Structure formats: structure tokens, C-alpha cells
Length: 80
Image 1 (cartoon, rainbow, N blue to C red):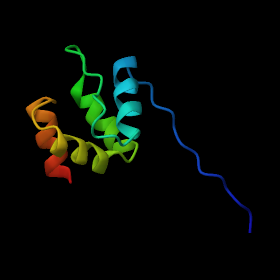
Image 2 (image 1 turned 90 degrees about the horizontal axis):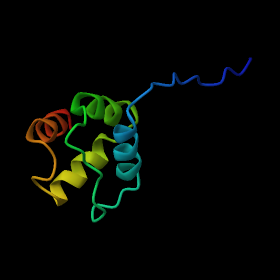
Image 3 (image 1 turned 90 degrees about the vertical axis):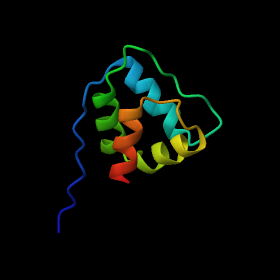
Image 4 (image 1 turned 45 degrees about the vertical axis):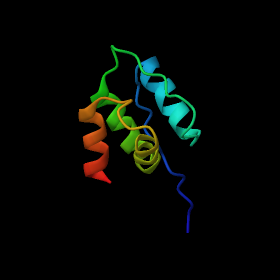
């Protein structure tokens, strides 16, 4: 049997999305997330799903309701 390492395709994202995902991954619901008015929330949602952060995003938004765009919060809640 030959071991085949997992290969993850690197996906380029905006710096604002990367910062958001990194802060979310810290799993601290009391730490404010970096939110910019120009963020692509579809890209953020895809990144949350792709990186296994959906549960953390749901937990964060339950602890901090109304801090993220309503469409994003609804997408996270519906997917969870």
C-alpha cells in the first residue's frame, strides 16, 4: 500500500477575507471580527465552509447578534 498525501488546493482570497477567517478560527466569541464595508460576503461564506469554520461562525454570531450582515448570518444559520 502506498501512502498518498492529501492535497489541498490553495484558493486565493482577499486580505480582508483572510483576516476575518483567521480571527474566526481563534474561536474567541468575545474577540471582535475585522469587518470592512467592502468585504465580499459570498467569498467569506465560501471560505467559512471550505475551511471548516461554519460551526464557529454560527457560535460567534449567536454570541454577537447583529454584528454581521443579515444575509451572511442567515446563510450560516441555514447551513448549520
